[in-house]
Length: 172
Image (cartoon, rainbow, N blue to C red; front, side, top):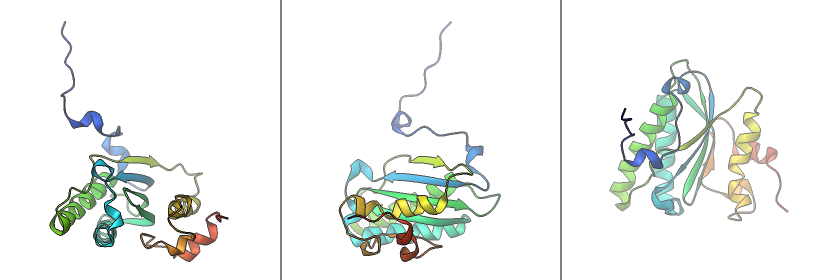
């Protein structure tokens, strides 16, 4: 008896995805999304602003709070919390990536995102504020800046960078 093989296309290169039902409803997610070919596109302030603006717009439309985001040169970290039982993380991520990609292509004629993204659904016992602080401290750990508040491409829709910096480990 012959077995059917999965189709050969870029799905094999994408991070594995849970069933769609796992991404709907009240939950918190830690995402990492890389730029196409890990190009350092977010070193361009205009590109980072375009992507950030679409992130915050999409989050509001899809009923997500952005607890923290950090645009590193070639990837972005995001901690998002669903605010409604109908919140859909996959729709939110797809919409954000599409809108920001269109704007970046118009601005600098470059492909912005790789296919897919990495996600982690937080458990109840995982501390959102500590994870948010960890996210915004990425540029400090990478040696890009000395302080969380010195980095222009991090933020939150709920907390100030000063609040998150108080939680972040200090780099000596």
